[in-house]
Image (cartoon, rainbow, N blue to C red):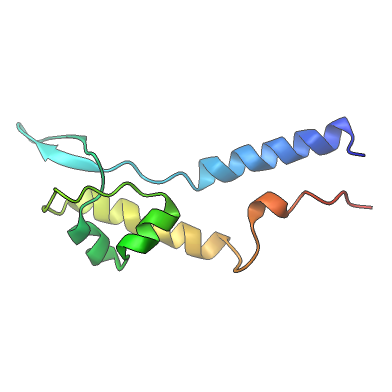
Length: 104
């Protein structure tokens, strides 16, 4: 049986995990040298980073098939996100199961 402290650690870990792996929000150029939120990343941005459409869907990244332009801020955000995913996730181990068994 889990104690109150075990549940607190579990929820803290789960909340921190999703904050850490939240996908970047894509932006698109707008008039007057501004940027505005976009529907998703373009295929050319995914290609510049080296992601396929299937990998983007697996990571939970929004993809906008209609957009053809490539924005440098989106590319750098995608590279940082992919690098963070590769460095922090061990293959075959899900972060959700790290605290499922009670230590002891």
